[in-house]
Length: 139
Image (cartoon, rainbow, N blue to C red; front, side, top):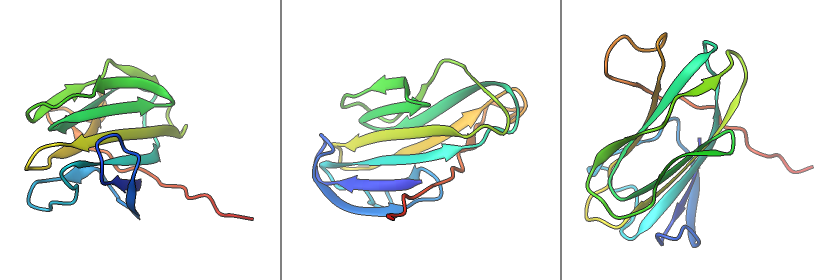
């Protein structure tokens, strides 16, 4: 996913941009400044036509959009917890836009994004989202 890192919790002052294959940041990495944040953008490709649930485990603020629909809105300082979207119907083989905004206002950083559906998980654990990233190429 295309990750844009910020030095503020309003996500206005960019410090760097990089490609992250997944959203999985732990406090040992210290990848997100305090204060600071990240905006991840990419696409996911569902394997099955069915309802998917998205999961974000994080401290502090998170907002998740799927196909430009805000599905998780927890934009406040808080302890590490898992936020879960309502089920979203997706179509197999059809790319879906993903955007995750996260801000860190704590001494530690934790953020992980995953998804699950009846066909992708037979346990309570969710699969980490492996997203596709498409960069715009100037003409």
